[in-house]
Image 1 (spheres, one colour):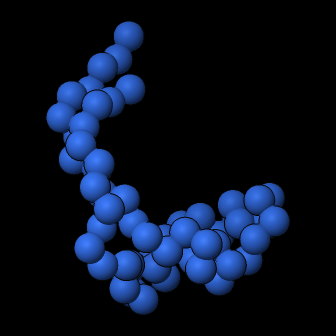
Image 2 (cartoon, helix red, strand yellow):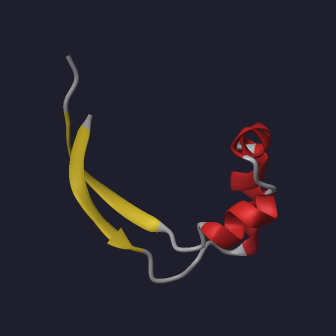
Image 3 (cartoon, rainbow, N blue to C red):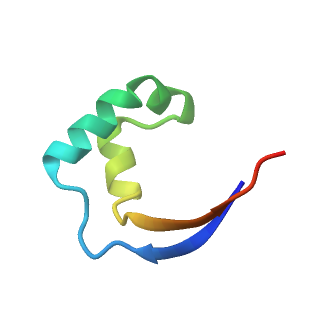
Length: 57
């Protein structure tokens, strides 16, 4: 678990960063019933989190 500050990203992922993300999670789009393109269109605003504290137990 972690706590931190979240903020809406000022800019969407550029195409190069999106390709890296889409390749990493390629197997995860079909189980949620979306193509990579549909996912990108639906979740187009990045949320940036600055981690302030990490807790483990």
